[in-house]
Every structure is written in C-alpha cells, then in structure tokens.
Length: 199
Ligand SMILES: O=C(O)c1ccccc1N[C@@H]1O[C@H](COP(=O)(O)O)[C@@H](O)[C@H]1O
Image 1 (tube, rainbow, N blue to C red):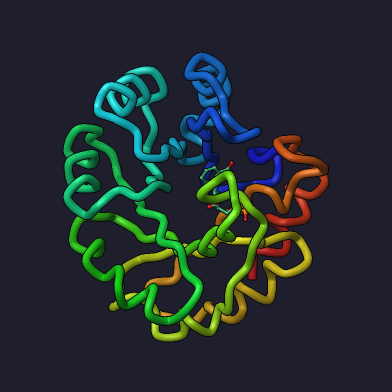
Image 2: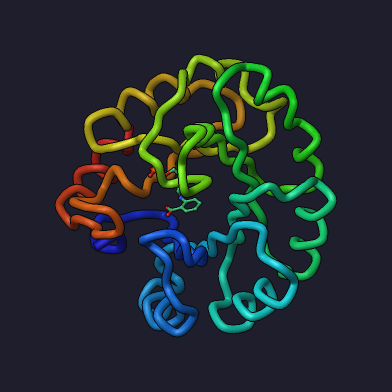
C-alpha cells in the first residue's frame, strides 16, 4: 500500500513490544518488493550489535532509524557496524529538547524529531502524539531532519507547509496515523497521507 501510494521510504519495526513488530523473514519478504522503488528503513530500539548485524545482513536496509536511548557514541558505532545511513529519533516536548540534542548532528545522516512519549507510554514511539511544530522553526543547525509524531492525513499538510522553508527539513514519517487499529495499516489512509504530504 505504501508503494502504491508513492511513499519514498518504507519502515520495518523491529521491537517486540510494538504491535507493528515484524520478524526479519517477514520484513525481508516485504522489502524485496520495495527495493529500488523506495528506501528501506529498519527501526530499532536500543538494539545490540548482534541484532544490528542480523538486520543488516537479512534485510539490507538503506537506513537504520534508532528510536531508543542510544547515545551519540552508540549511534556512531551502529552506523559503522551497519554500513548504512542512520537517523536518530529525538523526543521533543519543548525547544530545549532540540538544542540539547545537537550532539547527535555529527554522527547521523539525518535527525528525526518525534513527540516525546507520554510518561506512561509502553512504546518510545508510535504513540500518535504531536508536539508544537513551531519548536522546529529554526531547524537543527542546517542538519537534514524529518518530522514525526501524531501525523495523520488531516494534519500532515499543515505540518509540511509549516516546515517547508525551514533549513534541513526533508519530510515526514507516520505510523499510527495511517492505521485503523494498533498495528493494522489502512491502505486508504496511507494513500491519503502521502497525497496530503506532497506540497
Ligand atoms: O511504530 C512503532 O510501533 C514504534 C515503536 C517503537 C519506536 C518507534 C515507533 N514508531 C515511530 O514513532 C514515530 C511516531 O509514530 P506515530 O506516527 O505518532 O504513531 C514514527 O517515527 C514511527 O516511525
């Protein structure tokens, strides 16, 4: 559905606590259809070296999306081990969260600004929570970045228009906003999201 909608990137969640978790075999089979048509992203949360290497070899992703508490040093090590591009998710609730995380800029290819998860959340992402996009009005020192957090077909157009002129802004990522239930993607919502995200 994401390919049919014209998505530029397709992500696979490797996090057993998530309703979106896929096995490496499932992801590899799905990625075969996507390769060459969209970039393949492996989402991991504080994965160890063995898991990163298994995903690198089994999925051959274009990107790792690191969505845990990885330090800048760990991000650099994963990037080296994976031999792929890496984007680090940064949880944002206030402007200081952006400033505090500039230390990641030298070790990533891209930043992903996501809403900080609610205190009682079971997942570090995929919670359908938004944050004030004005916080990103100055960008991240020119570093390429994407936006996520509570985006859906109804609000993504406004988000893209708000950030379109911010240096470094590349695009958006979505998970729960294109689902009809936890982990159950909706092809119609995916198509509507991609259409609305294109300026
Ligand atoms: O989607 C998940 O299940 C997930 C699990 C663990 C970490 C991140 C996860 N998803 C990412 O979270 C953000 C925001 O998602 P949402 O659109 O608000 O549901 C997004 O970058 C997802 O890729």
